[in-house]
Length: 145
Image (cartoon, rainbow, N blue to C red; front, side, top):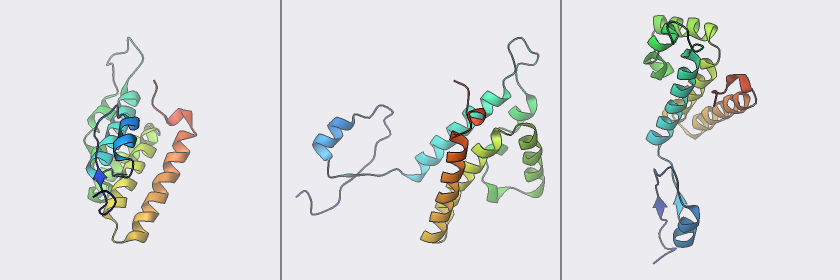
């Protein structure tokens, strides 16, 4: 019987038909699982990295080798880095500042899920929102389209 038990739905569809959802399951709560949220933001970081590593057409090589070589390091959580890895990222971020907020935002999303309690999760979410708002307001940090 509808209304006696909460209904939770999940959609991985890129082109979700909200009207059909609302008509049939308007009482359901849409939930985003952490795996897909992290995966979507990792894809965003990859898009920024690819944009940063590209060089002007006709350049040799066609991409920045240091940025390309850091692709796996950029996917690591901040709490999993050793001092050498962090130093390597610091050098990369100094040379390519657009990468830093994208990596920081992803790290805060991880922090949201790794928090010990609700207060810690909300603090990580606030930091993520601040990074996101700052980045969205600066066109020089956004990927080229």
